[in-house]
Length: 173
Picture 1 (cartoon, rainbow, N blue to C red):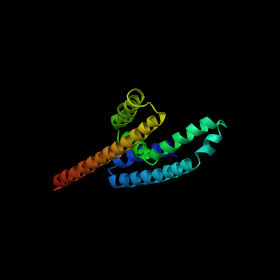
Picture 2 (cartoon, rainbow, N blue to C red):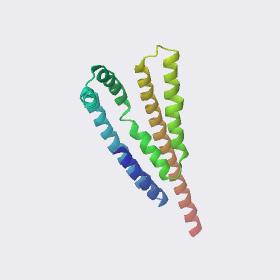
Picture 3 (cartoon, rainbow, N blue to C red):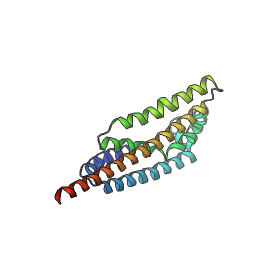
Picture 4 (tube, rainbow, N blue to C red):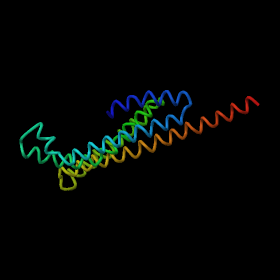
């Protein structure tokens, strides 16, 4: 559902921003964030409660299920935040700005997850669990940056629309 919603969001953002209907853009943004945060929170809760059942579908090896259970219970901490990154990236694509999603992904992977994982492996104790926490930190940071950046971009579009309306008003008088 998240990828499908993001694809629809790209088109909707392009339509509403191109047509100057920024209040509708905000409405669809709130809907996309809200629906996907609810959906991913529900998934996180289920995955947190039943990781052994989920991994049990794929293997009956107790060590694998044990490691997978720990991984899933840590990783689901970021699930409710991931829609902020995905929807924000789609929003930027919808307004014709492809570079911000690149920087958001760069921040998550290359500036947070990889350095924290390297630090854990070569400076700290090298526990695998710390790498999983690095992933949660990376997802959380990219979600915060993506949602904030898109919000600022939409405000910029709103101000531009107001300025254009004032200019049009002066031109007609």
